[in-house]
Length: 251
Image (cartoon, rainbow, N blue to C red; front, side):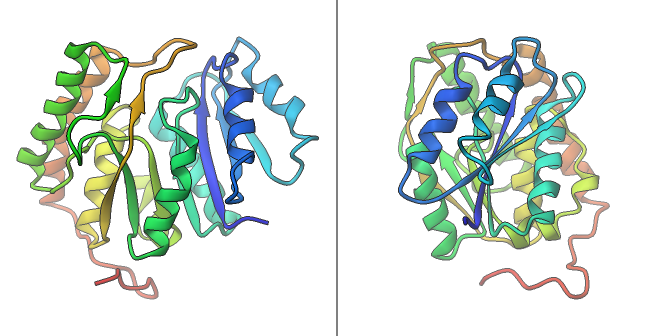
């Protein structure tokens, strides 16, 4: 059994999905894996289902009709994880840009006091491999922009490799998370901090995918750019007070 669930959203990841699943299950620390597949026409879901007999009770898949956005996939996965009482819930890409070997380090950070652990590309310099310089600069300055607007002290505000303690996802009203694209990652960090949770950055090396097709686009960056301002304005009219019965964040 495992107290840790890795959520991996997929759309057309047939080149990577079996390799990433086998890599996670080869780790010393036991993890379960939940694939959220948005109707991949390339057969990604069928590959996952063919592996379920081999990893029975450890590998799960939820299929959705069509592309509904990264944020909604993770929210779906978070609710699934809470229903199944996992203590540590992870976000990870399917394309090996996030190294599965770092899962244990993110988990350890939460075991040792963090409420959210971020796999950070920028907390110790710039640790990105195989990205063109333009994309590195866009990502780096996007995080700087987020810090200026939101006043949260996170070096890699757009990072998508994370570990949450269960209490964080129980506390954040997931049905009120507004963004479904790239800005979703920023909104989740911002909201966790506003609720008083301890967010730490764990240095990682991010390696761009070598197989499959990137889902990134300028439209996604535009959503994030405008979304940060919207999110900050919305925060002025929201309460981040804990509901009765929800535990206090760590000091």
